[in-house]
Every structure is written in C-alpha cells, then in structure tokens.
Image: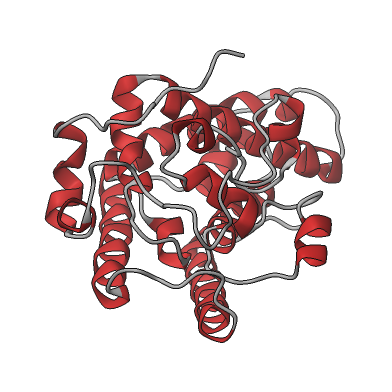
Length: 277
C-alpha cells in the first residue's frame, strides 16, 4: 500500500468533497426526505461560507496536514505502529476504527462540557437539515478537533494513507448522514448496521434534549449501540420532528456573522448534557 503524496492531498480531498456534494445535492432534489422550512439559498451561503472560513483558518493556524504529520511521526518512529511489527493493512484498519471511536467520544464530550457545547451548539442550531448542515461547525470547534486528531496520530503512528482515507471518509459520511435524502425503510434498516444513515443521525438534531443526546456516531453506527446512546427513531415522525435548538430561530441561526458569535451569546433552553451512563 503506497503512501499518498502530500502535495496531492488537498486536491484529492477537494475532489471527493465536490463529487459527494454534487451527488447528494441532486438526490436531495430528486428524493427529499423532509420539506425544508427556510431559505436554502441563505442557509447554504452561510453554511458553506463557514466551511470555507474553517479551511482557511486551519491552513493558517496549523501549518501541517494530517498526512504530513503521519509521515513525520513515521520518520521519528513515534506511535504504536512505528514501534511494533504490524502489517500496513492491519495498522490501516485498526486506525480507521480507533479514529472513528475517538470522533464518537469527542462528539459526546462536546455535548457533556459547557464550554465545548457552546462551540458545538452552532452545528445544532441549524433550523433545517440537509447536506450543508454536515459542514457547519464553528472554527474553534474545528481547531480543537484537529488538535485531537494530531494527538491520535502521534499516539498511534498510523500509515499516512490511513490518515488520508479516514479524513476523506469522515467528511463524506458527515455530508451523507446530514443529507435530506429519502432512503427506503428496508435499505435504511440494513445500511445502519454498517453506516450512520440520515434518518439515524437526524434524531440527534431533534429539539428534544433526550433525543439530541443520542446517535453521536458519524461513520460507523456500532459505537452508539455499544455504549448505549442509540435511538432508532424520534418520538415524532421524521417528517414532523422539529430540528434545531429551542430559542434559536431564523435570525439567530442563519447569518454567518451571528453564527460565529453564537458561542459567546445566550444559553439555550433545552438540555445540553448527555444523560448519565
């Protein structure tokens, strides 16, 4: 398994992003799951504007990519897989699992602690639910997540290709499971044994606190089942459930400038912390 070229990493990630966005955007038109309530144009301009700002901010603040970090860690022989004898394939798949498990617990921590929740809350205050919701995260939230991933790379010492694939997969599945695409009930029921589906993750965006503290997974659905945070369906039908955070209406949930200041504003009215295990 050959390692990726550092210079081609941004291009590859951008191409996968655009391809996934195009496919999902088309499917949202052809097979919408829910009727959107608010201006799609306004939401998309601001949600994708925030995503672009995140990319620029990380490029400026973190002058090294995950792939470059993995290559540096390998050169320094840091991390588990750089100190023990393991095939590239084994270290590849083990890292994918550990990476996804880390993202799951990171997500739970962002719901557990008030400071982290205030950053993550911007993602939840989107008042509609479509592919653009999957890239709507506060820049400080993205920065913290990036630092956590770098710590994981140093500890595990994964192959550079595993780092690249895990990032591409996370980005693609985030857009997929936030998409407004209607899947058949049978296909959804089968797929969610292997992958987080839009219907599964949409429960996590319910305005009901007991529901938005469920289904934390982004890629694989196994962690929610294993750690008791899985909820098959919301109390209301998927088409009828309310999306967002109580108290955050259109004026607080769309404008990019307002969203960037949202972590420093008022507290929301619904429960923000996960229920005790």
